[in-house]
Length: 98
Image (spheres, rainbow, N blue to C red):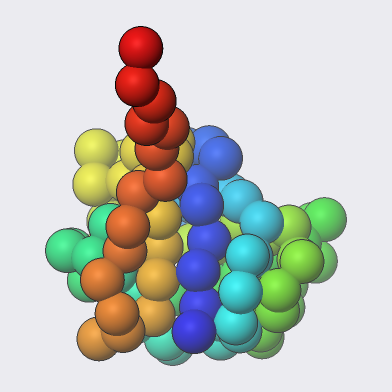
């Protein structure tokens, strides 16, 4: 199943919102639906890696994901993008007893 942790988010005038990060698991293709933290579902309108357009990305790839219909406020650094309809996302954390 696809999973990417968002490293940065920015807007490109006339294009849309871009979320960057490294694909942790799975494969992402243009046209796929992804969930942001298991909630908001967005459609992937483009994938770019090192200034080259791509049709898909796989685990280990560092990419930018274009969302034409998303506002920058919908995605934040640290958010997790997963395949829509997949399993629930758990946020990693640290627990300790003092």
